[in-house]
Image (cartoon, rainbow, N blue to C red; front, side):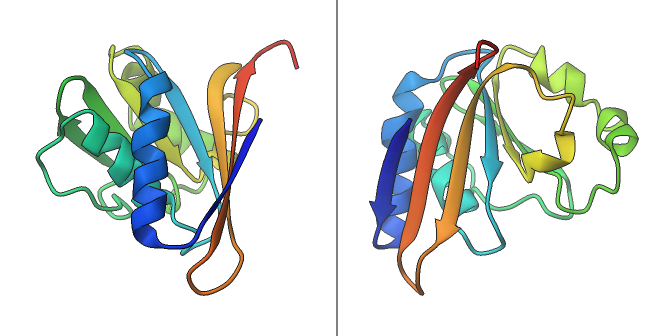
Length: 142
């Protein structure tokens, strides 16, 4: 497990960009953290690494933002989803099998159906400008 302290939004973006070097087609990143913890800033960094040109923002109301860069990036926000059936109905499985990188905010709503092989990124608010970021690779053997 890797643990980082970010002292600004730009540091969180930078850490996301660095982390993206570990990702490839088919990668799943489960993002956990309260509102304002920096999940979307981290995603912006990942998208920067994949040379995404679109504006990256939280898809809270659209549920999924698809970005086009060196790999397709699917940014999925489950905040408004009420249950697993709703999540499956948006085509979650198809996104996982699409050959892109899937970034899932509020991944705890997928409890029990998340693939075992994934990255778990947990973000916490330490104070107004400081965030804790922990990253673990889950491979089903833990």
